[in-house]
Image (cartoon, rainbow, N blue to C red; front, top):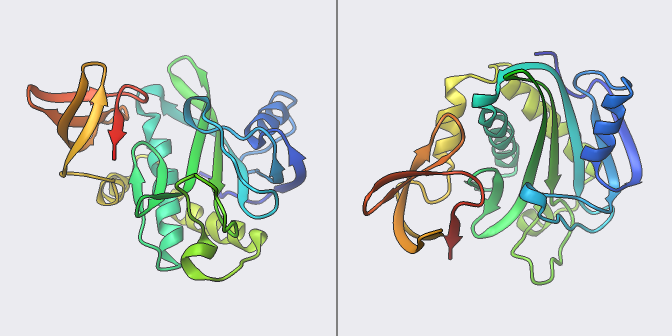
Length: 242
């Protein structure tokens, strides 16, 4: 797959970089590897429509366009795994220990530092195009009641948003060299998976329970050991209890 970042579009304000990217794709105006970043995102979204709130100019919000992905929809989680590992690898450059809270929130201890929203264009049973939206907290120091942190809060250094973007793109391209199906990505993802092999509290449609995360199935479902055996969960079917 060709490298990311050969074209970078910088916007002052937009509702969502994913929405903006999707519109450019519809008009045939975007090439593979393009990056759309925004100083302000007025309607940023997380998984399942969750709102993503950041202060304008203090954080990195951007989308990456992948063309000719040719990945079976059964393995779309490989994209999530790729980007999650790329963020973990990037943050390791700053000696920040991270964990991946399934499926793709990046945490430092119990505070979120980055999130991902991936939207795919499918043809038949294959993903042909993918928009990868990423929000990374960089210089923000006050998150109100949100359990969040930033590069600044963890290192005490304000950084150029552009420099952070270029550095992350380098990490992403390095990981991409191995391909989406690289088995090393699975090992890297599981190594950082939050609560892996730890007895923890969860809630599903049957109520509260104690269980143990065993890993992630190839289709992206979370594998959890309950008292009655192993159960696989999709997004929003299970809730983590602190």
